[in-house]
Length: 377
Ligand SMILES: [Cu+2]
Image (cartoon, rainbow, N blue to C red; front, side):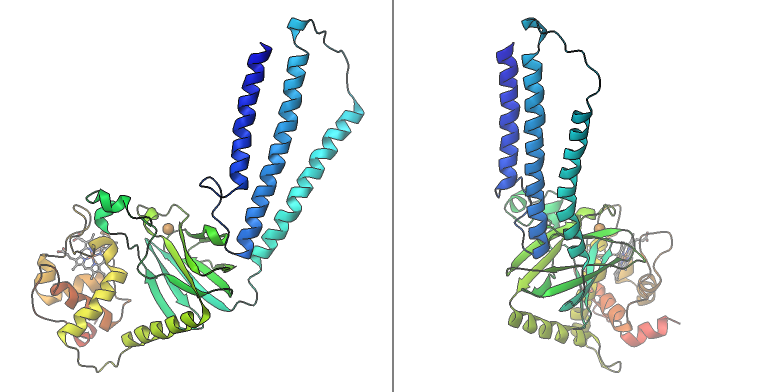
């Protein structure tokens, strides 16, 4: 009996030691290696508290095991008969109280530091959409969307080899958030439709994105590198398909990236009288499609059977222009096809031109911004 209990205890102890050792070292069971001041504090707190928990576990279970084994009936132990012991009661109130304060004090300090978004070097607004993130660099005037970049065939099981060999499966995007190393980045976080959550574990940042509310958080990345996270709030069917990628670069590379992005952004803000060619509109339309339509109609124009219609070979996308303009501008009530009239004339004209001349569609015609302007009335 004694030896059996003893060996069970030894097994429990070994398992616990193993998991505590796991927490203390870097391995797949632990938090990601911390890459910011806050993440370091969170990491250290987690380790500290695991050790405290472990010490309590060993003391309490050790004492219990000792008492059970030593005082068992088979060795003829007689139960002690006594009531109340003020000294013991005071001790078992004071000790947990001290332990709690010892844990709450550093935890509160970290929470206060997390909330201190003052004096940022850069401010970026992140907006959650079903199912992508939109980013606006408030001072720089740079804006873009970040869509999942994992190819569809890896997701739907048609290319399992590629999926297995993809270390960033569902953790890759077309446009990463680029920030300079060692600079305080304030993230302003909101959402457009439902609650999402912006989460980069290595930075110790996780903030809910709530429609109609603005929340903020911050990070200062310690090292150059690529850091990945995900939407951390169940937000609908593609919740697992809106990852977050932050690329931390040296200051001069960041400046070059901003300049590059600005060129792209100003290319869209064109002169309204510009005479577009079909190829120009199509090239522009491809970007608009990638940012607004790809989630449902897919990059290959094939949609998702029984849910989102294929545009490749679609009657509307190859038929009269009016019907095509109408469904994009006004949507189709009662379906997931929402109106897109908030896009500019150029954006709508270009995406329609793109749809009419991509995949299997070869109408050879184009829709100009002027036609969209007229169709809005
Ligand atoms: Cu989400």
